[in-house]
Amino acid sequence: MILATLQDGTPDGRLVVISPDRTHYALAPVQSLREAMENWAVVAQALGAVSSFPEPVSGARFAAPLLRAWQWLDGSAFPTHGQLMEVAFGHDPLDDDFPLMYQGMSHQFLGPDEDVRLPAEEHGIDFEGEYAVITDHVPMGTSAADALSHIKLVVQLNDWSLRAIAPREMKTGFGWVHAKPACSVAPFAVTPEALGAGWRDGRVALDLHITFNERPFGHANGAAMAYGFHELIAHAAFSRDLAAGTIIGSGTVSNPDYAEVGSSCISEVRAIEMIATGKPQTSFMRFGDRVRMEARAPDGSAPFGAIDQKVAPCR
Amino acid sequence: MILATLQDGTPDGRLVVISPDRTHYALAPVQSLREAMENWAVVAQALGAVSSFPEPVSGARFAAPLLRAWQWLDGSAFPTHGQLMEVAFGHDPLDDDFPLMYQGMSHQFLGPDEDVRLPAEEHGIDFEGEYAVITDHVPMGTSAADALSHIKLVVQLNDWSLRAIAPREMKTGFGWVHAKPACSVAPFAVTPEALGAGWRDGRVALDLHITFNERPFGHANGAAMAYGFHELIAHAAFSRDLAAGTIIGSGTVSNPDYAEVGSSCISEVRAIEMIATGKPQTSFMRFGDRVRMEARAPDGSAPFGAIDQKVAPCR
Image (cartoon, rainbow over all chains, first blue to last red; front, side, top):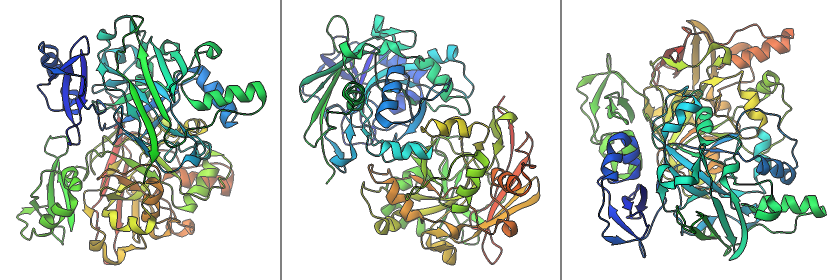
């Protein structure tokens, strides 16, 4: 099953069911994905029963599948990303034996082609290509094994980051507020089953193709997570219930063979340049710069559709 | 104006308007405080026009004013608390010149007399007495001066903390997930105007009386914030809009003369004991322990009502 949300001016948008070939859609029997998540067991059956898709996807204006969510917890589950960010930010290696995770803003997720409005170029504007999952209600103390069945949808997102601010906030230990503005999300939310071989061990085993100003930037694979999404969910639910519609992120997709596959954020590329030549060469984003992100299946299809957008000043 | 939310089994509860003497209530003309916040300019007039309060407050079952919110950003604006926590956690002083703030879980706020269910005593269960404000929509880049008018309601809350876990999470720089379970909130949300002299310079100038297992624990005053709530809001809105219904917290209320006024969390008391004798004597909470928090006006009244609850095992 593939779902998406049309921009209709309401705070949660209008849920639609997408045809298996991703060319047409039908209005869903419930108004919004938020509503669907809160009653998933019942609603999923009705959504799955939709078999007639009268409207063309081409030309439709998609929002993020969830325009707002009660909770967004982003992991950092790719060890290569962690190692390169230690170089980028100049901090010591963490000797932790648990998944890294922060709580980010969840009251606004940008659509796949909206301009991304930010205060200033000098903050080091960077993208982070990620995968994420949407859960139903997860009780406190749920095990990783049990968490797998709580994963109802998979999405692809861009966790926008302001790199010049991030280390200063990290040093406080309080996590990020300034450095993590609203994320962008690709149009299609897909059930794990519909990903077929692209869903393995609680991971998205697909290459995430990224182009920066139309130049190929990376195509790292999501299978390289040190912890699967089910393990991230169990971590998140240690001392709290997770509300239905919670979004759990993978962190920046990153592979050890980055020399071949490239990266999913600029900061990693700068770290690789620092290691090779002593200083970074690639600049962070300027207003007007454009990034495109699209996971691809082996048959060339794009299960989540594409994020394709530019950054712009906020006023 | 004083508002509260009745537990009625719905996810957002039932909004009521409380009489000025806090003895009676009337059902509000909108269903929930969440709905009211999203259309505050219009709804506040209707709420303010309620003048007949038929139902007695005594015996009513109050939830948190907002059972769930799109965003909860908690500051740490009392310098004395920061200094003592450096001792408690054994970390170096931060030389930052901006407010400390983390994003916490906002999809569940516990009511004032609900049991607080947590995984284990060994995690160092602690309370943190705080004040907080609820805003309407705040655009990205709003100044501190302009932020003052976005403060619509003031609340009193308990930011539950698991102290044995907190330093490990802080060391990652990612902030807290395990160490910060759901907060509890006192029953009454009060407009700044209705606090009278208790609202000053964007601060709650009231003593927060805390008893731990019925023994007096502290009565620190909220006026000692290094940054007012308007400054915390401006900080929060640096690179994001704040959704209507965002809750911004003060951090643990703490005063320099703690020898006289006591503290608002156990961890501070343990730090004071460490400074005095080399090691902490006061234990963190055990299951069954009870904490009561009640801000008091000079006339002895309790503008926010009381939080009075005990901790219990989650299963």
